[in-house]
Image (cartoon, rainbow, N blue to C red; front, side, top):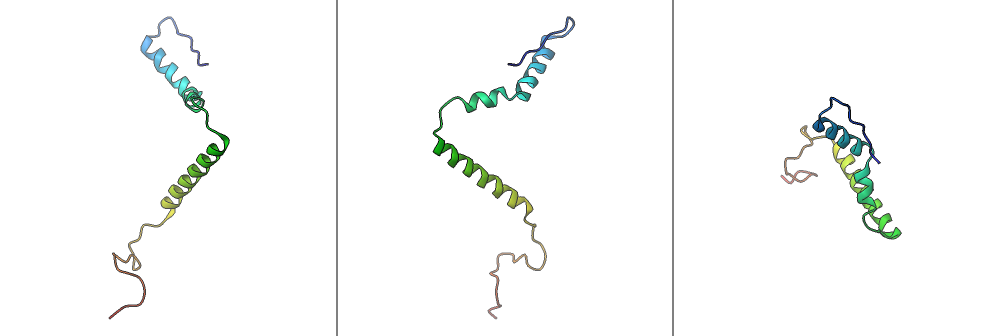
Length: 83
């Protein structure tokens, strides 16, 4: 439970900002969404696996070099020349 104490000279806006930061840092909203509905164990495993695949795909896409040299192709098929 997020709890803040308001100082005597503190405005409501700054106290509300501190409260929001504390709620985000304690991940209260994230936990609430996670427990909002029941997910069967099998479905949870499938979801975890799908998220891992998506994460790895993003990671692989970032590591791939951006072409531009002799091997960039520019839309041509690779292999021996057909001339």
